[in-house]
Image (cartoon, rainbow, N blue to C red):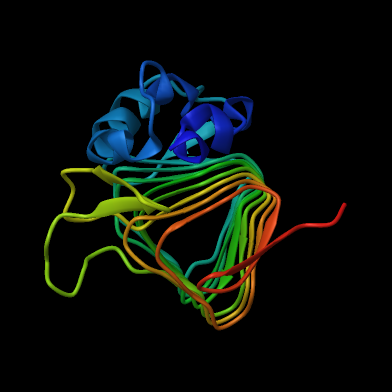
Length: 222
């Protein structure tokens, strides 16, 4: 499960949530802690750089938030981030600096590192997206199994119990997820990997690879 370790997925210098990751080994350990962390972090943010809007919502003064977007706290919208028309942020959401949350995109219990893009009709729930990760139009994280059982992370013959009913995807730095793809519960994608459009992914995908379909994963040519 080396691919799944925080140190192999994310550059922690690219998120103000860095303190949350301290002491953890796997990123999904943090999912139950996101809301409480945002509440504490929000209280420490500079009033010169952030303004508080409503209850437990902090928005950077340099961020752009469309008047039709809906944000429920606790939430932090980072510097120079863009929250577009009809975005729906349901709470427990930390949107990194320069990130884009697009039209009709829904977020719930997530950390988006700096410069993440979820720009068109995306659902991202109970997930962590690394620096410059990009989800193509209509791609989503599915965060609950159809049988409602606890999520298990699978890498080859290795299996790891998470103890979580809700677990979307852990997406590493600079991952490209193709349009219309579904990242099923327990998906982990290593950094610098590309997911083909219209894919259904449900396992650990190694770094620097191209996911074409289940059982067909190629090394990414530099």
